[in-house]
Image (cartoon, rainbow, N blue to C red):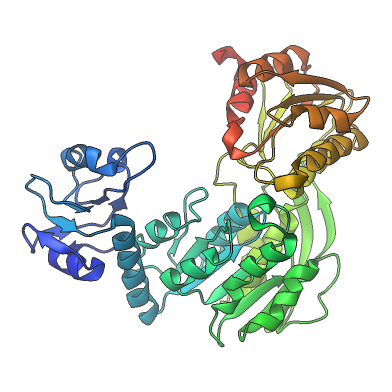
Length: 468
């Protein structure tokens, strides 16, 4: 945000102000005292493991000019006292975005069962070629991350890209009023958080809340290859933009597709980008991110950017220059001995696990073998065991030579893998040690599991074995 007086921040957050109303605060808004910069507003959030109020003194010592708290504290800096600091943060973000939209800010919301963060990173870098762009770091896609990211908007910001996750009905609907999306991108409907939603149909209903929030002059960006996403066209009054891989979508006011899809030896996709309808043209694209699934993510970013007036050549060039900005998502690194490590450990569900295993299979090198270190896919509900068996079977079908499984469903993964040489690891250290002992210079290893397993530790040990 731009620097504001404590008095104005109190009005925007609905807070009772304690302290000097003329104190200038900003531009940063932080929830971690270690991230405080001079002038920052520190938001003291209560949490399950720690209470932000216990770190207020440290935040002030680090330079915070004001604090947003639920109770008055004995300190010299201005205090914005509210019943609920998260609600205060949300009110602040909503007000800042509302002001910026009135001045010309374009807001973009992205949702889907998988690919949100990768698409967000690609789109932010494309839009940045047209003007200052704010997007979340990593996966800040919930009731805390969306408003926290939005507070970074200032008078110069032209685009705000918001990633929107959901663990139940109404979650996305509650995020939309904060950032009032003008463009809504729905990538896919899959099985992530199936245990919490209860059915894929319920997931589709929740994801579609994004397009329902769009204005008539906005753009609903829909994956024409996914029937559940395509059906969302009937839930919005916005203009429709569609994207597809392999052939042109047959509908939509703006249509984007990829043909002549190929890949480099590190499985970085290449394709010819085409557009018709509200924008027209063709241009070659060579991505710097890994995996065939990134083609769809790039197309979603492309169609959203084209809807904002960028031309096809500019979009294609920007996509080719875009890099992976978020950690533990298809990160490729070479070990000192030459073995290749694929760190895709940020999260996992049946759809993203399928994409990752297919990428692993495509990375096989002459004389090399394939190793998969796989952990649990969490929040899948009653069908979890069967889903893990299916992933194990896919690993076998794709020619994986060795499987190391970890977690509560390790036995299910191994069962599905059948005759593949397999090991159940007791913990991350054991998984890393087993993998390191097996790997040879021409081999490729994939490390993937849900966030709760923190398998990035395994990937990092394998990438830098000299660290132990």
